[in-house]
Image (cartoon, rainbow, N blue to C red; front, side, top):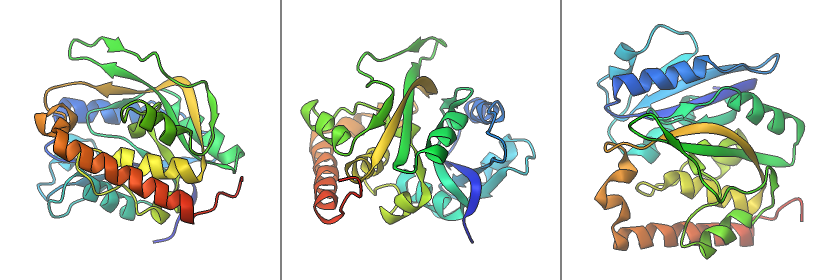
Length: 253
């Protein structure tokens, strides 16, 4: 399966999706306007084989459904990556909502600045009552130099300056890094940080995602913040980033 230029692949891991949330994610994709000559595909990879997502969404030639054995969110994202064909890869979870214009902004930066390898966007938390909450520590809009994300993360008790679930990344980089890292609950951090130490990124100050806060999300569970496991996965992500920085030269340096 070859890569298709001018195609952005939005990949979504899926396990027991809430119907209303999945349809809102779909509606947010339909609301996107892409630059001239660009197309999108939405690759929905189920963690299992119930095929429930296919029953919840309308027929749309842009949607690619996949199933597989149960393996958790990181494995599921990577199977979606394997099914995808786009030169750019964008993450979207079933319970989140893209804001209008975000895909066009991602494409514009990555199509015009070849040094930038990934983009992220400002996020608002979407609360159960429909209200939104922002953050006060977003970086300025523009390029993020290699190492910035890692050093901020270390200095702020493993809190990132940008939200990893908003990443849009060039396909060669995400595949070279092995896709999403096989750690529980932090697989997106495990991709963003290694990417950020060996390449330039970009941050959009415009809101690109509504990040739904609700009791069913994985990061809301007590296990996600259990100290022993938390420290293990943060330590492994850190070690991976440092190792990559030492052995993978940055062309800009």
